[in-house]
Length: 110
Image (tube, rainbow, N blue to C red; front, side, top):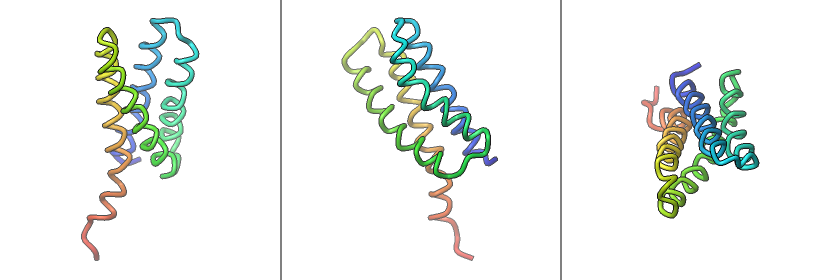
């Protein structure tokens, strides 16, 4: 497993834990399932050596998690810390999912 995949898996699992903590405190269990389950599933799949398609879809969903974090950070000041953490983790996920493609695109041709 490459370093980028390890970082991606850890960031996905951390985001799942963040969402479980964030929405679990407010007893919003539907939100826990909707927000925490996808990154948890992707993180576990990546740890079990899933293909590049899993990393791609994790990166796509991370754009949605980023947008949600920005919206919450701007509109709900009491939840701003959680939202900023979600923004940071989603950016890590986007970049970690993109590294293999960027390396392939910009590496030297042999």
